[in-house]
Image: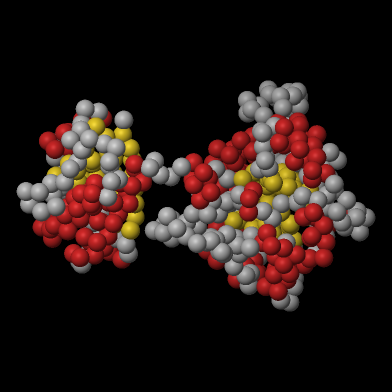
Length: 420
């Protein structure tokens, strides 16, 4: 048996990142420990941890440098403050009772240690690695994190070093405001995006007119202006779904849209490819008389084929991530706003029977005064275009919708105290 722990502490070049594994001498960790002692690698030579020369801790620890040791200056940081810090952290953890359930002579630890080549302050190297070692050891013994912690944090998390956020649309954070950029140029789209208030409730849609005008590259162009945004490519795909998903994915789209008027087999391929690539699949039900029947057709094995002469698609039944109830602009004068909203519950109930907790979006003629009604009917996403994009005060128009979305519109972490 063995346990794994990890911790990142500190800042600047002296930052410490400890990965460790603890287990019995007679088990896998003991075998790896012994192999590390005798199988040396240039630039990554493992060393036995000591608090000071001739004083190792119990349990023994083997320190493995993560970053290549190129010269004696690098070696001095590992063989000096880092070696002592890791060893002292383990000794103090023993004194504090963290390993009280273990026979210290029966177990060993392997610690992978990060030392930046530009680190200079030995005291900070010691301080950060000491704290990181104790924290990693505590986490290992307590099997941190538990599954609840992972599920709670995974869609809130932003990696500090990566430099950008990878947004998702967790159900618990709904409702969302999707802003449809049905404009003719990326330049105009960028102007609108720069006027948006910061909020993790906002989704940006690259509208079909912009995609037709400039191609799917409009997505990556806008990504430069909004690197952390959730961006949807409104392809309204009717054919060759797999190809169009791949193109949008390569341009960094977070979600893609297919038309519900496409045949079920094409929609299956479209959804399958989106899920394979790890992005969201939305189905637009504009002019689809029965959205639930459409979901039934693509989520169950049927006989529907795009072409009677073609063999049946090998793709299994699929469910989209988002269903869009869409009242088109051309029908706004003949079809009442909200006429389709009563179908929201029916769609969600059907999806749950299939084991899918999908999101339902609504679009067409939505303004701040009727957005609340859509939310009461169960909408997770409010799609707004001209009311925002053609406003003289875009930020004010957006905030009106966020206000209409109520207390649920508070951003992630706004009142959250970050404690590990």
